[in-house]
Structures are given as structure tokens and as C-alpha cells.
Length: 340
Image (cartoon, rainbow, N blue to C red):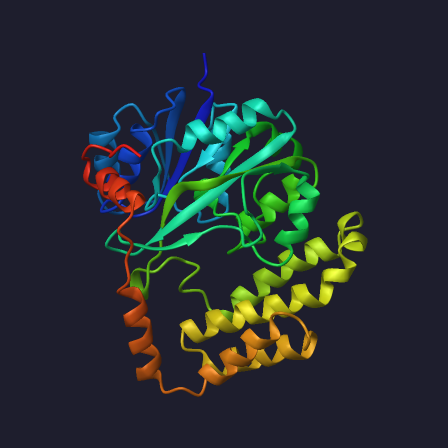
């Protein structure tokens, strides 16, 4: 009998991190699941780590194809009715599958359930709780209502997501046009047809990398990031069904788009492009809530880089001494998970 849930983990050269990821999967309170790891052409010891820590996991090795095709391989390989996404450098909270599956079990019309995520740095220190800015409590609502928020930005953290496999059978797989934001596009397509559930508590720990070890997103060339974001936003705003209903959000959505690109440009030291994108945000919608933030980006673009770097180091030094930090340390280190 197939498992109810498939945890899918695409991996590429994560031998130094995937052990903690697998331990977090193995320590779930929900037990009716399988682990499927798709090794996308790793050249390190990823396979040996997987076989040592999770010998019962299904391990599939292939030549490197990159995102989003590796995600499609993961989805095709999954045997479960529900599919949980887990990054090879991230970790699940111990009750994540239990909480996610309960929402799908109780709500047949819900196709996607997601939740909060703790962001952590390279050393496993919590830095920020990521959650939808509009969410005050758990909810189940129309997927189309969720799209009205998704047109502004992708508030769904992939490693907190569980999806019915039937959604992919109905809506198709990840779109090969995208080198970034393929998940944002996929959730939007599913939510045109399915409802959504949200769990108002941390379900996962999402690792944020910087520098040369950074993620594809963190290292993305700003013009490429702008292009992929624009494709996604225009897919929503030009959709025959959703576009007319979201017409009132068009200016605000494009302003947020330019502001987001401006922030990323500043982070990767593309100051002139960031300044221009922030100016575009102001030009598109000078009276929106984004305008003040865009002006701050423009001002920041004139601050000497050493001062910006100092401020970033001071912020990154903050950490949280919370129950979740202790839970994370136990998961990453293999110790006993403390009681809530």
C-alpha cells in the first residue's frame, strides 16, 4: 500500500547539510510517509550521506537538469497522495506533516497547505519568522482570494508546502520557462482551481545562504530576476479569468515588483540598477504603500558600501533564544526534541 505522504527532496552537492534535513524528516510525529531524494548530478558525497542516515529513502540519481525539471522528476516519482516539499538544506518542524496532512484530510477542496517558516543562517541560527503579512490566524479560503495576495509577492515558503498530487495531475507540472519563481507560478496555477489552507505556526526552518555559497535566488543577476518576476506577474494579470478581477491591483503589483527587484539589486551590489528599479516603483504608483520604501532604497544607494556592510553584519548577529531555536538545534544535532 502506498504511503499517504511523499517527502520530496531535490539535492545537488548538499553532503554537508542534507544529513540534518533527513533527520528532521525521520523525526516526524506523522508516520505514514516516504522520503524520495532526487540527486541532480551531485559530485560530492551526497549519496553516501543519504544511505547512511536514511537507508530506507528512495534515492534516484540523474544527470544535472536544474530547477524546475528536477522538481518535476520529484513529483513524478512520488507515490503518496500528498506531496511535501523539503529543501536539501532546510529542516521540518517535528509536527509539520501532522499539521499539514490534517488540513488536507479535513478539507477535500484544499489543494495546498502552507505555514510559517523560520529563516536561519548558515550556522543554524534563527534570524526571522517568515509569514504572510496579512495572516493573523490559521485559515482555509478560496485559492483565488490567495492569488489576490500572491500577485503582490510570493508569501508561500516552498519548504512549508504540502500539495495533493491530484493538483499536478489536473494543473500540470512546474513551468520550464522559469529559472526562478517556478514555485510561485505553480502555486498560482493550482490555486485557480483549488482552495488553500494556512497553518499559523512554524512548520519548517529555511536556510538562507550568502556569498559564493548562496542559493540560486541570492546569486541571481538582477535583470534575470526582474524577467522571471515579470513573467509571473503578467501571467496573473493577463489571465482571462483572474486579470479582470485584479485590475485594481495592477499598479500596486508592478510597484511592488520594481521595489523587490531594487532590493535584490542592492543586495548584490548592482546599485545603479537598484536605484533605477526603485525609481520605476515610484513612477508606476507614487501614492502606493511601496513608495516610501522605494525612496529609502534610493537613499540607501548613496550610502557608502562599508556602512551598508556594517549594518548588515550587525543585523545578522541577532539570533532568537526561543523554543523553536532549541527545537532546531535538537533536529540539526540529533538530540532530544524539547517539549513545547
